[in-house]
Amino acid sequence: MSSSWFNFVKKYIWDNESTPYHIHPQRLSREQANKEVYFYSMFEGTLVGIVLISMMAHTYLTQDTSNLLYLGYGVSLLISLFYLVRNKQIWFAIYSSSLPLIILIIFNFKGFHPGNTGLDKLLLSGFLTLWLIYCYRLFNICKFYKKLKH
Image (cartoon, rainbow, N blue to C red; front, side, top):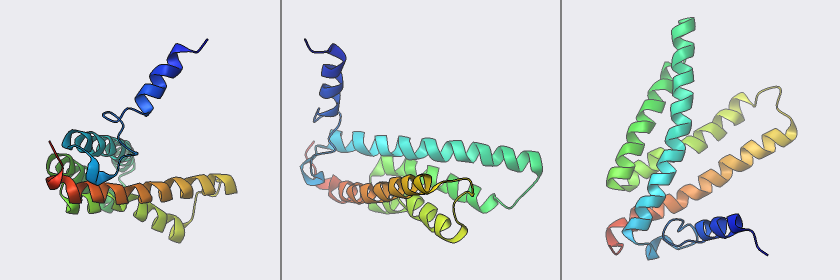
């Protein structure tokens, strides 16, 4: 006797229309590409939004203006994500994909939080590296978007 929840999970994970992550970007339909770019933008936009709200609260409460450059970058990322979903141009994909690279650079120069263990550092670095690798797929989706079938 199989569990019914597993059938739903399996159907969602392997559904070519709703989760086309195992299909090459050239063979996607425009609807699939739209869903994938939308999901990426929601993922990154949520992370950036949470960090922006906390940075704005910190700036407001402490009157510390050292984060203004980061705030400007975060707002520009949100604008870039909006235009990425709307236009699917590769320039917006490149700018939006700069976030994991910049975080890796910051970790390299400023270091991790002192309380992080070796496993924490490995997991964070691995996640950011996988995110950066996924950005290559995003570039290809934007590059081939005009040629995709409707």
